[in-house]
Image (cartoon, rainbow, N blue to C red):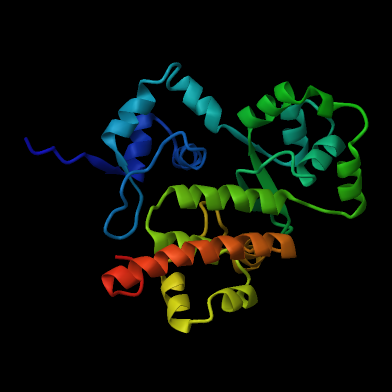
Length: 258
């Protein structure tokens, strides 16, 4: 017997099925709580009804799901959720112990990081020793060097989300290429035709990315790796992804995704 095609819904309808607002639904996808299905013809995300039914069947739905996607932004609010003072929260965040889920750019063109409340509380329960007492030698060194690992931690999370959303080797390579600064990308992909393919497949800016030019210019900097170590990591990953993508093209005779 031929298998029946699965029913796929757009994001707006899927959010309504789960009783979530658009922002809540996006965060549920970002956190891996709702898994997207095959993309639509225009590249838009679609969601299988079976996946929505799975989410609905989970214990505590819908309250538990809504609690997981509740977020908080701003130092004072995040510190309160974590149960520490603002200065300690800032240190823990800047030293990379907490991973932002997203960002906003305020009217002063300052990045305001967004965190899931549930993750902050889970960190507090898991690492009570870090909520008081003296900072570790590693953290003290990072503080002295004025390091800020929040953008890097967010990029890693965002790239991971995008990679989980596709199995196509050229699309995966495009995700990794999109994080590299232009000079590093040209060095990693000297073939201009391949760069055109990667640019065409580049993922759109994340949900909430500002449209106002001044704020967009600030946010744009968050999308690119900014340290030699991070650039090297993404370049190595891109090299590996391109090896698979080129092998696919050699087998099909086409340059780019099939």
